[in-house]
Image 1 (cartoon, protein in one colour):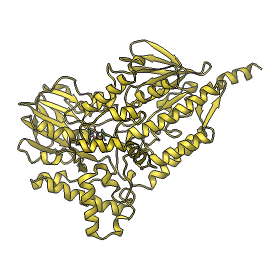
Image 2 (spheres, rainbow, N blue to C red):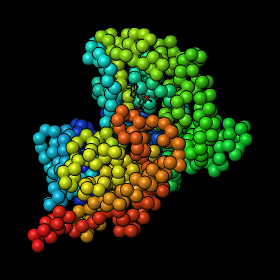
Image 3 (cartoon, rainbow, N blue to C red):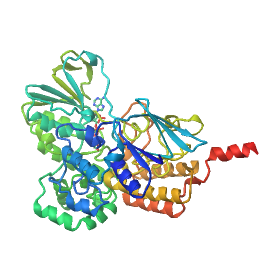
Image 4 (cartoon, rainbow, N blue to C red):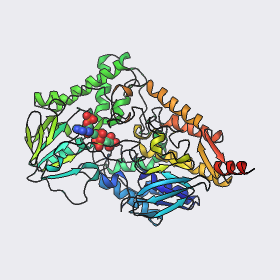
Length: 540
Ligand code: NA7
């Protein structure tokens, strides 16, 4: 076929819709037997999006916008999955998706200017252009401890949650990890489990979700002004609709600052980070915001010892992904919830009956790994992708990913990445940044079709310049002051390179527009494949 899309999550579905509408011969392949990507796999109790529902939805169809009604301010995983299924049915997307098809490898045929894609079951497909919509947080990682195989209870990975109901009644549950997943599931599991022990390596900042069912008036209001709301999100730095405050944190008197922080804390979730424009830029401003949040966390926990352990001190607010939670800290006020500080007393091994730390044994029936992902590059590097001259993507990115605008990399012609490293991805509302990229690449592909371009390829100069720009923008921020999944710090041995683009969704959009206006600057567009041209020249 002409175009093969890998992955039927938010990005894959949207790409399929847009390309098919524009008459492309296109197919999606999906490893799972169901669509939805992370929302198909992350079915753990309490899984919820921390972007507001009406902003975490596609903007390409006004009819869809009016038809679909969200029930809560922050949508739960089952509702998001229903929404994505509704979109697939409403636009008849399923007929162009092949399920249960996991890509094992993709090899670029330089002479034919096409990709040969092989699947784990032995099947193969060829396509002219290959579009990877593999997600940013979709390759789960689980830590290794001595004795893991000895544990006689059950173990579950949060990002590979089983579809059956998991009954926690009468069970002693251990949760490893206190990112969004661990924080979201803890209060929910604590409601029915006999005992929950949270194994915390790093105390994390969180802002309460202020979640609630949406009222009929709120829904009517959003639907009546959806277009304006979309404009606001598209023109905000994060795609969440929040504009940063204008006055610097330390330029206001403390009472006024307290009032602003309090208002943002109680209502805006992630928007708290933009209460002042310099919270993620200036260490002193960040320290003031971090102090405020530590005070707030402290107010939510009654036991002084537990409280002290839950206060984040290793990093500044926002330098690692903060959480928007619903009752996480309050869960520790319950009699059946314990905190195991594994920074202070690390896990030494698993035993037949539970987890042993340097301090004590925790008897457990169920262990949940909420330990996150090999972020941004993990899923892209899982299949063996081989470009020009036999070079694999893994080899090419050995020192860290290098891209032009996050969309492609030199040496890998006709390969396009959606939500890739070098684009706003995890620093943005991915709905907004994904749609932005897909609209742009649809126009690009139309140009390639109209101009009969056999091969498009990022130039080495462009990707060098883009990576330098990504690095320069992040150097203006505090993001590199902590190890995080933004900068490879989440996986031992991973290159420590800041991967998402921190220049904001709006600015990124302008750069995409400029790239297109300049004739797709930074990409070489060839009517005949480079290899073929070279072959002809050799023959002459
Ligand atoms: P995160 O945010 O990456 O959190 C992973 C958590 O697991 C974090 O607390 C880690 O501790 C902890 N972790 C990771 N490895 C270990 C080991 N070896 N031992 C103990 N603890 C460990 O992933 P989530 O799934 O919670 O959230 C990911 C995104 O999903 C989130 O940002 C939203 O976009 C939705 P650490 O902090 O590294 O010490």
